Image (cartoon, rainbow, N blue to C red):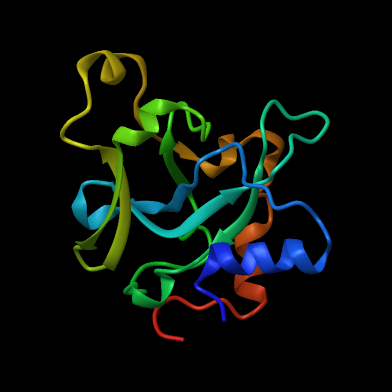
Amino acid sequence: MCGGDKDTFRWAFRILDLDFGVSPRWMSALGFRNQYEGDRFCGHSVLQYDLDTPEGFSRPPPLFVHSNLLKHLGAGGLGKGSLFTDIRRMSNDYSSNPSLNYAHSWVYMGQARGMCLDLDWHDTVPDDVRDRERPETVSVNDEEGHVFEGFEDSWFDEGGRIGGW
């Protein structure tokens, strides 16, 4: 019996006879800027990070793209070059950072898009935390190590679809 993604990872670690571990970085949202809402971020995938920092990197890079909302997106105007363009994350996204207790992820209905994931501060965030850190939207092209280079082409080439199964 498996209770979801985290349990799947736990079983994989167990089968491989490895100690279970979690990434030192908190998840991010991966998506695009919705042109129908003034370029508001529309996340459709959860970005999960490596457990280790490879040589040449300053922090763990993305490891998994869990495209859990792509099946709920409207595809009009989306395709190669416009689907996996931006990452929404906290400026300090280390899992040990207490300010993440104030981070708030939620799903909203994006105009002409369907279900979108976003990230911002919870209403109760203290001013000193808000002054020090922030939610940020960055281009996948700015991700260290260019780990997204060729990703979107490969995703479509392997049969990736927007909306439906």
